[in-house]
Length: 405
Ligand code: ZN
Ligand code: ZN
Image 1 (tube, rainbow, N blue to C red):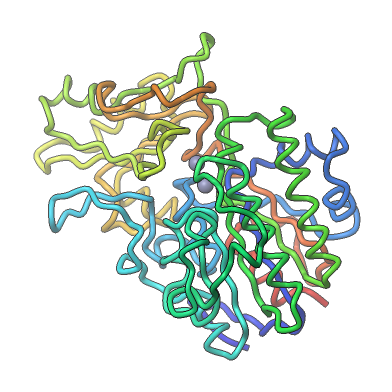
Image 2: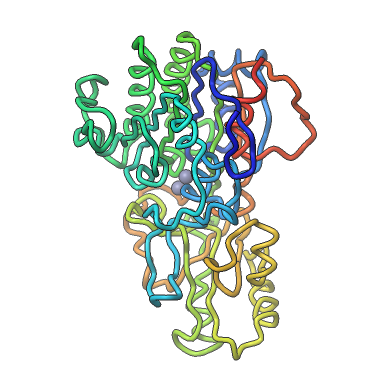
């Protein structure tokens, strides 16, 4: 047994694969099952273990991937967005650097305990965080052609997988992750533990049950079936769900919070931070359903919270202390207010700062409580499982390592 961040994990005695399907709202699976595209998943839903779990809020990629691999919420591991306002330097910075990570990962500790661990991500932005201080294999599909033994624990990835490096904006970027996972598991010296993390490019564009979505899940089902046939215990979960965020005319339904606060308090007095912001914004225009607001001390934060809460499209506004407690966030890395939008609404800064020209489909996005429900599916009947407790996506490694007979 090893203990990581206060939780105990048995070492893997058969290969386990934890899959984080980016943006996998449970309805994607239901629709793909109904349309007959996912025979492997259909069988697992009947014979394995099917739970619905809550992801962490903000329902963004990095906080949730880090929760899954550390087994704890952002209040412990520190990664609470893709992006944060660094109060110390007065600048807005990316949180991709492992220096922001405050907790060891289960992956690194399993590797320290002698297990062979492999991590494959779609986008390179997650690679350094997930592979922090981890001995083993860790590479991204995005930069698979640059992987070396020294840096990534593996070389010649493209030749081994037999697929060209896909575009960062493509379904194939995720397919490469699955294909590489099957390739690693197909050799005699195979990983004890593997973590696969895809991209939500498809989910941002295609609603559950549409052809584009069904094709993605059919592709995934094929690879998961191969991993199953290779004897792997597979846990499938997601970093967050996904919802349409549009008005009836199909334009994005945006509350431009910085514009409103500028009007109420004066220009640039408040600072709205959107932690969804990252270098890959084409498919969502940096619009999500979560924002945090930095305010000067002289304002009555509670009164301002009430005023924002009264806006249409806003679901909740919490002060820093309330949000840190309720959403299990690091209080020193969020603003004075945390604002969550409703299911069909997103929060922007200023209208002028969002380039929506790259949106070639009606906006679908995430970030709010409305995208909190995610699948937690295991291809095994598990023991000692309470279906009535509140499961989290960051229980994935606990299920795989501690509850498989
Ligand atoms: Zn994501
Ligand atoms: Zn996304």
